[in-house]
Image (cartoon, rainbow, N blue to C red; front, side):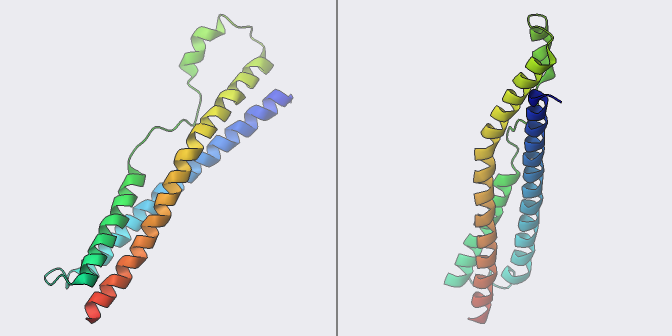
Length: 147
């Protein structure tokens, strides 16, 4: 196996990990959204008629937690693979050297990984904030129920 082929395999693995991370993040965001709705239904049901300060904070926490989770779930473009169709026209103009093709593909996949990385980082931060608002929602509903 040549160095170009090794680079290509590593680039593929990196994109595969990113794709797995995105799917995991979206699964966890779905769970936060569901849990947040259940908490609102159970704890918030009794408080909605009399919205005190704590209940308003709880309601705002619910909206923020659910809103951030929905934002994470919103479809956005990610690149996790090379568009083979775009290569078809180029193959006639290039030599059919496998090492050159592996190098070019690895470079393309590495560019995709960099482009995806920033978006994944932002979505991860939104997930953390969504979880924090979920916890805040529980605390505020409990306090609102005690008053």
